[in-house]
Structure formats: structure tokens, C-alpha cells
Amino acid sequence: MSIAVLYTLFAAISTAINLGAQMASMWIYGGPRAVEVSILVGTAAGLPLRYVLEKRFIFDFSSRSLVHDGQLFTLYSFMGVFTTLIFWSVEYAFHLAFGSASMRYAGAVVGLGIGFYVKYQLDKRYVFVSAPAARFP
Image (cartoon, one colour):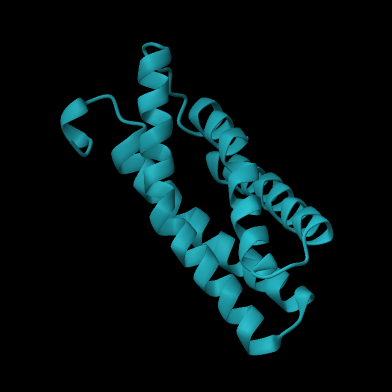
């Protein structure tokens, strides 16, 4: 199976986990800032699984130790900050523009798609590389 197909499959799985966690969050908590809380919960729900799947099946990368794996996960998560801002911005813009849950979730799918593409590029260049000099200090 090609990397593009696998990455798309993993992105779809991650998106489903993200949106499912958002929906569950909204069901559990409907108070002030419920939308913002649900977006944060959804983001946190899919991250560890995506890291493991991408590290193994997309980048075929093996960490040297548990400490190294922790460092990689930290860097992977840090790269995700930028792409998460893209995702959140698009989702929240849809929420503000259309005012409905279905359109907010549509915005989430669009934002996640853009974010996944950018994230792949960042991870390929800075996270899952063999040469330490290619990483951020």
C-alpha cells in the first residue's frame, strides 16, 4: 500500500477519533466554552495513536530508546502546534460563519485535511530523520 493511501487512512481514523471525542465532549459538557473545550479534547484524543501509526508505517522509523521516543513524541507534538492552529482556525471560522454543529464539523474536516498535509511535510523534514543536525535544537 502506498504511503499516500496509508497516510490518508490514518488521517481518516484520526479525524474520526477527533470528531467522536468532540461530540462526546459536547454531550458531557455543554457549559461555557464547550465548543473550545471539545476542540481541545478532540485534538488530544487522536495524537498518540497518530504518532505511533505514522512513526511505524509512514516513516518506518525506530527510536533508539524510550527516552529518544519521548523526545520524538515531544517534537512531533510541537510540530503539531502549528498545524493544530490551522485546524482550529478553520473549524472555528466555520463555527462563526455558519453557527451550526454540522458546519463546524465540516470545517474541522477541511482544517484537519490542510493540517495533515502541512504536518506530514514538517515531520518528514524535522521529526523522523536520522541526522540529529536536521532537527531543531
